[in-house]
Length: 459
Image 1 (tube, one colour):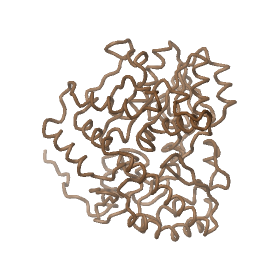
Image 2 (tube, rainbow, N blue to C red):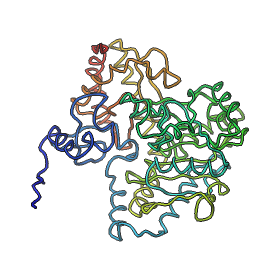
Image 3 (spheres, rainbow, N blue to C red):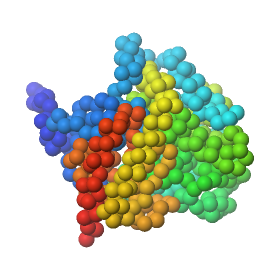
Image 4 (cartoon, one colour):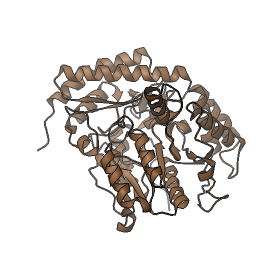
């Protein structure tokens, strides 16, 4: 039997998509890539360098997706590529421990620190953010002997069964309330409450606190657009959880190492401490953190970490089982180490500057066309909601005039700027976005703003 499959690379994005749909569900391996929210033909990329990505047709675009966050230094940074190539030359994986895993854990422990508080005493490397959050939840249940989990509507924590209720991001993009294949019994173990609502938080713990193992929350929501916690809200989450003997799990898969060397916890904890006491000590500390994206430098790598007391409940020391053949893969660890070592104060300063410029210029362009909107910030992550008032929760985010985003998106794409293909996603900048690149993005904004203004609500 001969293999008649063509090995010739498709010449266009449309041909690539048609070919992919013949073998991949929906033509993609992650739903938002299908452009379901914005329509049109997805771009199929074959190369990325610095602030640009290049598709199969040879057209380059300024990238404001940046691999959904990991490319904090820009794509294919020479020192990261060199570290990966050197690691690969020694072997792609051993199924055994390597010294580099310890180095990465020590680096993470050093970075996640505010004042005298360093909450990462132990770190477990895994392969994906979903695996990290799934393991953190299992660990919370193992540590407490309880069954229930609390999450916020619109917060996304990966695609494990118990976390897909009102999960924002791709689910919101596809207008799906949950997922088929999740049993009622599993769904019933997750209690979903409104974000930024202290009364709802107090009520769910008052009613179920004796059976709640933990509460998981994005340190700053970035999967329903960017929606930062109200001042003091994260601290309140941790306090109420601890009052009821539950664990607080801070999901920093997106924000960790991107918005600050110490993640959003570092930004928030320092701001809270300085505002109230004038010192630099962290006032609140989650029990567990989950990391992804930047920690792997673009390679499949994630982690969970916390105190030795809780983390050492994991096998082989404790009764909570977790394992992975590819956990701590040496090539991925090399990429993560190189990225974190290069992400110095100058990198974060540049990220903040570019984010501030682009968000302000985009807002100005939209305002010039009379498009109602608000800018949402969480450190250097930002997005736009097409509404008059800043939303505080998922329901308010979904009520925006989201139909204005698709024409805005396609206008920018035609101008050579690749944005996230959903209004429910954050925009990501990199240190490779120099002044010339920023100017090109700004030049594309007026036409995109006009397209957004001309958009009509679907009938």
